[in-house]
Amino acid sequence: MIRVLRPRQRPSWQIITPALLLLCGFAVPGAFLVAGQGEPAFDRIDTTWQAYSFTLHAPFWDAVNVVLNWAGYVGMLVFHVVLAVTLLIWRRPRAAAFSALAGLSALALTQLAKAVVGRNRPQGAKVLTDTGSYPSGHVSATTAFLVVMALLIGRHWAKVLAVLGILAMMVSRTYLSAHWLSDVLGGACLAAGVVLLLWWPMRNICIQENETAGGETIWRARVLRRQQAARQPK
Image 1: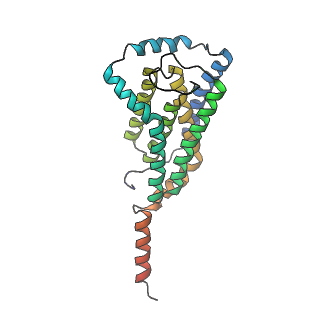
Image 2: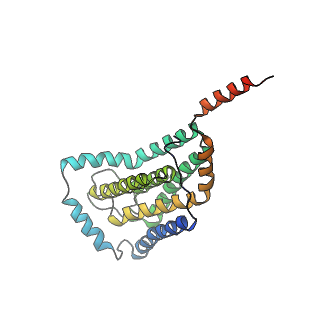
């Protein structure tokens, strides 16, 4: 894992500024929805995109999006748990705490926002949905996990894959008529902003931890300590 994880140090303003802009990108449409009682200024954009999504329907893409429907919520929760446990095994408890906190925070804030905004979902959803359309929980969970991975890996290819994964989930949720376009944009902005804000105070300890933890698991590290202790003269 030491060869995979290389979190990068960045100036605070390069983290805080995009985080606040992303949170504004979530909060402003949410405020429009609450004030406009479900008929925001961007309603025409939502309906136009929804009509275009209907033209893309085909059996193959239906099957692909059923898989994405599972991966975007239940799957991402499982991936967060696996990531946190893996980080603990490879002696990176602070990075594990960051990963878990980021996932739980994004999940909690998304559900809170759904309850506050109370937006209705599009008609004719192809999958089972809960109440509250804004923001998208699937996109939020996917964004939180992929942004955490991109920050911990610290390479450009990880950022590219994160962006592609987020875009794929955004398209999937509108393809399935589970969300409006503004819902998926709001979910991505919320989760990415929250993860970046959490990374800001935790980045230094996570970077230092990664540099000092080495490439051994917790069990291998214990074996090495015992061997070193056995070699020392009594």
